[in-house]
Length: 71
Image 1 (cartoon, rainbow, N blue to C red):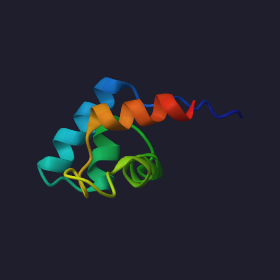
Image 2 (spheres, rainbow, N blue to C red; image 1 turned 45 degrees about the horizontal axis):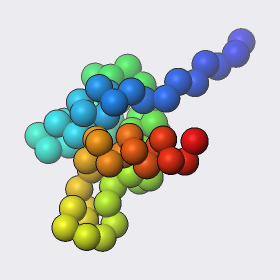
Image 3 (cartoon, helix red, strand yellow; image 1 turned 60 degrees about the horizontal axis):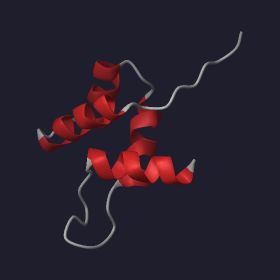
Image 4 (spheres, rainbow, N blue to C red; image 1 turned 90 degrees about the vertical axis):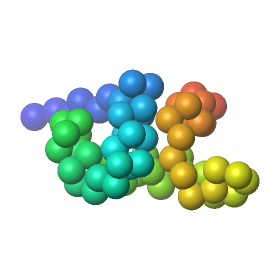
């Protein structure tokens, strides 16, 4: 049994951003998107701004750009 890993798309990141702004819990977001809850947790941990004017917020466009830079 093999596992297939796929990266989140920009559309999925926009959906995560909307759900976070709406106050939805990470587990519910994962269920809604059909991914493992740890995927959402890692995405938020890696891509939530730590400083600047957007500190503490998740921005889909920033997250996607940061992911592209890492790869």
